[in-house]
Image (tube, rainbow, N blue to C red; front, side):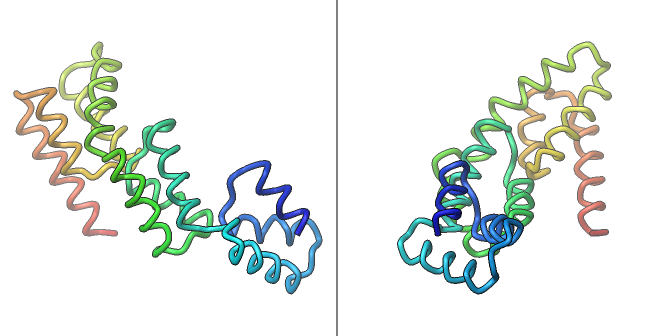
Length: 166
């Protein structure tokens, strides 16, 4: 248990990340499973709490949206139910829309030297790659560029078509 506590003291870990680290360190699977169970019983390891903390950091420090955060949590081995619970808690305190109200104008300004159509596509793609919902992005971009309705409709249609192919 000492190695597990040291790893948790060093950085925030999901159960899966901690398990993988302990196994890489040469610990036996049975010992690792017992340690994970003990840490959970003592409330020292909780994937929903990890998901909440991760989501808060991803929103504030990295400017990521719900979709990207959900993907990242899955790569950390957090099951869908605790991931959703942790994300919901964090997003209640800082909704994606609030983050987009800050982030979209900043990106819009960053690409001010580009032509309008290219600027719109660039900001659109940046925000989608960060994991924001296309409808939410379109709403924010309509505020920044009221005359871009047709271009935004084309981008939304394209995003909708891409989602149907997945």
